[in-house]
Image (cartoon, rainbow, N blue to C red; front, side):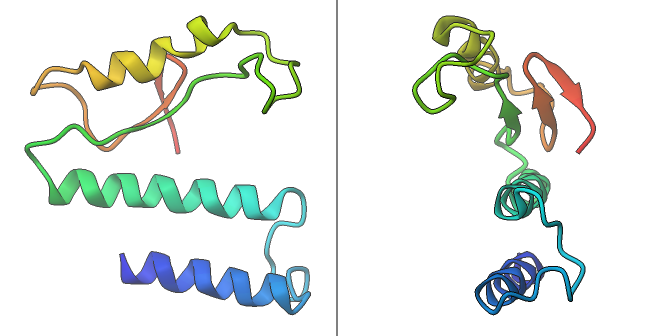
Length: 107
């Protein structure tokens, strides 16, 4: 976890100093990309640390909400399906995975 924190702090420092390009960070939606990479890494670490829990992350899809500028293709009810499915996983369910809507996906 310390290494992930270190990388995020490094990104923040470079962002504030205008050094993203110079230090090889992504330029398009860079903060979003770094935050998603960090949450995916934390997910894997927490899943390994807390074996009794199911720890996963999920992208519910593009949901038609104010946050998405009402441009989503899913209703809020449809967007809730994947998070609810993960919340209701049995003790033997998957852990340490990234779900894109209802499916396990690569990080």
